[in-house]
Amino acid sequence: MAMNPNTKKTEVLILTNEFVISGYIYVPMNMRFSDAVNKFLKETSFLPVVNAEIKSISSNATLEKRNFILLSKDKIIVISPAE
Image 1 (cartoon, rainbow, N blue to C red):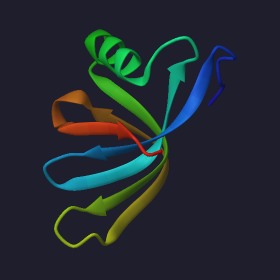
Image 2: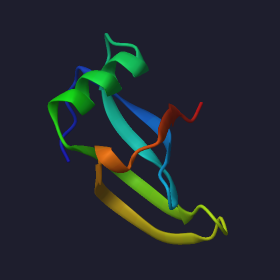
Image 3: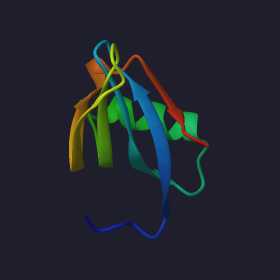
């Protein structure tokens, strides 16, 4: 995946009804995290996540690790920077 030089790789935690997903998204350098996510989610139906680790919300067991996933924005309950 080519990285735009005007973006920064940001580690995130994402909560859905069934999963906790940790990974990275790319956000514009000149935007706050919340503004970037809100703008991106208005423009598309899916959020690209790289180096994703998917855990069960009930057991916290790691179910899968993927280099890249597209997460439906309709499934996202909470997204926050991991820092």
